[in-house]
Length: 316
Image (cartoon, rainbow, N blue to C red; front, side, top):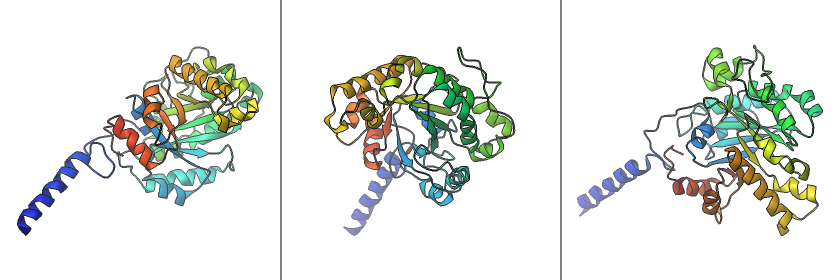
């Protein structure tokens, strides 16, 4: 009897190994195709899920290297602009890696510490885009993206001059000399980094993900034109700030907020880029069916549910 139970137990273990591959799910034989894990999933129409940190250095990065999340939002909009901490955070991710999917690090998108309220602000602060990307992050997110003219400056600031030209967007502004640290974080040569560090999906081979927050009533009026700027990789509607802009209660979910969300979602669909929205256990399947492709800090269990719902192959 004991021998029979042992055989059954071993068989069950074998089934778990074959089906699950590892804790979480996915195919244990999967091999990464890109540096940027988030882009690798999005280009296969797989939803992605993020967690957020408000600053942090080496130890925080090392602790998050095995995060459940596909990408990490490093929020500098509401925390100190400390490049030394960010570089240490990125190194911690490398030293604690690779991820379960085999990527060197999770994707990291840094929120810019200024809002895209007008072109003057953008031109005065565009250098921050270059500094953030030089830390090895895989993208940046612009709050209060008010107009396509503002967005074009961000795209220019993220690109090198040799990058393929984009209609209506000026030549890239990133200079030589700042690529060394980022290349080391990505695990590539300096030359390879300069070839890979371009904006997706405009450049299908690009590894940089640029996002917009269309989060006030002024930005909303330009939503369609802003998200259509070549080089934009995703957008969100920012319900908290949108509520403030319209002076309404977010908890009441008034029609003006419903309409704002619908407009930004429609704009992203027209532009062919992912839409970011909050997800929870009650709505994740409906959100995915609606077309949401980036889940805002849903937690490990909800993300796991979403990955199984879409039959994700990449391990998590």
